Every structure is written in C-alpha cells, then in structure tokens.
Image (tube, rainbow, N blue to C red):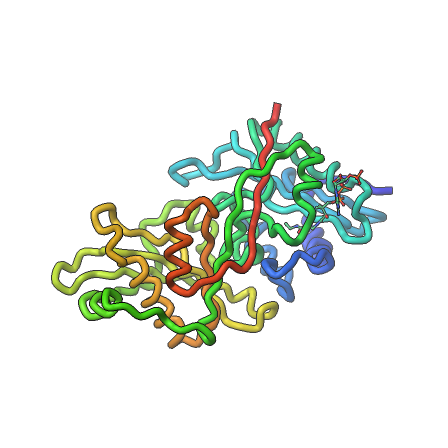
Length: 318
Ligand SMILES: CC(C)(COP(=O)(O)OP(=O)(O)OC[C@H]1O[C@@H](n2cnc3c(N)ncnc32)[C@H](O)[C@@H]1OP(=O)(O)O)[C@@H](O)C(=O)NCCC(=O)NCCS
C-alpha cells in the first residue's frame, strides 16, 4: 500500500537511493553523496519540508515530488504566485500506478494553499532554485525531454507544453576554433579581464550558484577600457563521476546595447574556451532557449552543438 507524507529529516539517504535508481538520463549527476544533495537542496534558505512530498511503500521511498516557487522579477526573493515543480520521480518498478499523478496533485495542493496561481513543471531557464549543480548540467532549466514521457504524463495531469531549453556542448579536445579576419582583429585589440567571483549579483544568483566555483570574464578594448562583452563560468564538478571529464558552464553572456553585432560575444566565448582549455577543462556547456535564435547562432558559430533538451510544462491553478 503506497502512502504519502511530507519530508522527514531522515529521508535524504532514501531520496539519494531513489535518485540513483530512476535512470534520470545524462543531465542528472550520479555517484554523489548525501552531503551534496543536502547542500544543493535541503539547506536552501527557502526549502520547506511541506513542499517535498514522498511516496513510500513499507517505509521505502518509491517516489517524490518537490514544489517551490519562481523568483520575483528583480530576483530579490520568491514570487509565491508562481509555483514550480522542481523535482519529480517514481521508481521504475512502481510506474504506471498513478503514483506520479498523486504526487503532482499533492504538490499542486501545497502550492495553491501558499498562493500560487500557476505552476511550471520543470522550473525553466533561471527559475528553479533546487538541484542546481546536480540536475540539468549547468542548471536545471527544465526536465530532460528524453528521460520520461513528459507529454503523455503531464498532459494527463492537464499541463501544456511551455518551454524547451537546448543544452549546447562544445568538446574542447575534438573541436577547433573558427578563424576569421574579424576574430583576429578582436584578439589583437581586446583585453580579457577575469575576476574571481561575479559581483553585484542578486540574491537568486547567490542561493543557486554561491556554492559552485565561478568566474566573471570581460572583454575590453585596450584603447577605451570599457566593457564590450561579459559572461560568467560556473564549475560543474559534481558531474565528473558521471561524464568522466571536467566541465564548465557559460552563462549570463551580455553585450551592452550599443556594442551589439560587432562579434564581441563570439570573441568572448572563444577566449573563454581558450582559457578553459589551458585549465584542462574538456567540455563547455551553455543553456539556450530554443526561441532565442541569436544565442543559438552565436554558440553554433563558437562550435557548440545541441546535446540535450530540457522541457517545462505549465498549468493554471484554479
Ligand atoms: C514521469 C513519471 C514521474 C511518471 O510516473 P508514474 O507514476 O509512472 O505516472 P502515472 O502512473 O501517474 O501516469 C499517469 C498517466 O500518464 C501517462 N503515462 C505515464 N507514463 C507513461 C508512459 N511510459 N508511456 C505513456 N504514457 C504514460 C499515462 O496516461 C498514465 O495513465 P495510464 O497509466 O492510466 O495510461 C515517471 O515516469 C518518472 O519518474 N520518470 C523519470 C522522472 C525524471 O526524469 N525526473 C527528472 C526530474 S527530477
């Protein structure tokens, strides 16, 4: 008989075991300890045990759903009108028994009671505050499309497709940098400035990436010293046991309005790749919304290829 209850402090080992039994696909880290799960999930300042609901069979955890909230527009706190399903899994031996459906219903009840008007299953680009560093690669921008029948399952729970984020990869060992006269000119004229931690970031950045290694890169023309392109890298060390290579994610690429369409972003990404290759990093990852054609083009020009897809589904709560 399956029973449902809220999270208990003694649950992490059972949740970790479930995680490793669920075949979550290439975008889920594996081989990590309970401390890591604790660090990226249960010790988050906004973790609420009532939002994590487990399904048990004679005290063994066979499924869980984890509900939370998206950030406010200025990323200074949580927007309790926008619910998120951050995690959901059912042990393979217990699937097709309506456990997933019951978990989703209970998570929706929790969110509704807390004031949520809608819920996004899978979170979305920059919206999921849990599992950063252990799910999705660089960040949990959705749920891996290939890992579960999301359309059939979430469709049966009255959700509709919302977003698809493309995980772009570049293998620095096997790919060569593109060459052009413009890139050569930029290399001569631009200086790379590296700071050891992105500063001036909002609360939402620190709660998600604060435990991970990070650096900020800026390109500045030697002549003016003004920043023409900036970006961050985030270490993805928890994925080393699964992928067998050192990987780093690029995020937060930004070119000031007046400096766009000069090839500065491409020059920056390539310069970041060069520096990371020198540090023995083999794989670089970036997450791009499939609607963002400009960013897709940029990463393709920098020799990145689409590797996986993360999806989200949405539902209004009455
Ligand atoms: C998606 C998942 C949670 C579904 O759990 P479940 O308990 O098997 O789902 P349910 O039994 O409640 O399914 C409800 C309905 O969804 C649909 N559905 C579920 N699994 C399906 C499948 N494999 N094929 C087709 N339809 C499916 C069916 O309509 C089903 O109703 P039916 O069995 O009466 O036909 C489960 O497959 C899973 O854990 N997958 C991996 C999760 C994952 O990758 N999580 C990563 C994010 S943390």
